[in-house]
Picture 1 (cartoon, rainbow, N blue to C red):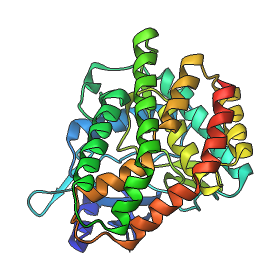
Picture 2 (cartoon, rainbow, N blue to C red):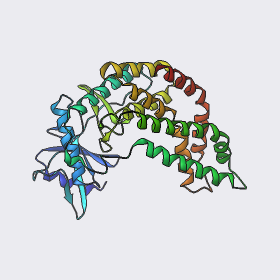
Picture 3 (cartoon, rainbow, N blue to C red):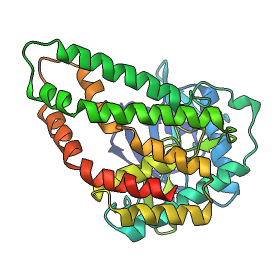
Picture 4 (cartoon, one colour):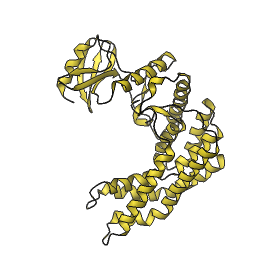
Length: 328
């Protein structure tokens, strides 16, 4: 971020005590606490949507979120030097959740359930009719991903000289593609045969990187992917990261599901939906998608290592999937 962006701080009614560079932004120490200044490339309507929702969360008892501040003119976005736009938002200094600490993980799950309950209390507005808020259902995404898997496989199969990465992909393909099809067909059938539950707000990118343990509690940041959808998506994304970090420990999986269910009971539809989300080989698809859209003449070693990691963890994940299937 260009340091001249700090000039926009003069447009806010607060006293800036000091500033320091951080990744893609500037952290500001002010008379009203920590703030984060960063460039913004989205729409004003999107900013107003986020401001409205985060204000509602604060009013309902979840104060530690990174809501944008309005400048002296009442705008959420400030301009400086032509077309450059900046936002200033509340920020927090703390540490991320320790993904190896079950007690901390369960505290985060309880906080997620609280966030989801508060989301459900916020009346939906016509102004929320934005492409970034009303996103396509996951079944459409899986349909697209499966076509990408098939296209990449055809390309690799027709190559005369294959790399180590390509040999590994071809070896793993049958089982992972079968899982991809089963997940797609399962969710498709689920949505066709059941009355769709109402859509609620979802964080959209709920992970341990967007949570900070602070002295007052847990701060939740980065709501730029917030949308209307099925809230189990948030639970899945957080759980998957934790499960991967803990070798698909059933103790971790059971603990997270039980805590969430205590706070916000999961309906039968949501439990089945969650199962199919876990069934889909998301990490395998990501590696192939990267490969197909990148320079195929050279595959970074880390992507070969990721494929090996996926294969190594398959047995542990299968045990978890068997347990999860019995639970639903």
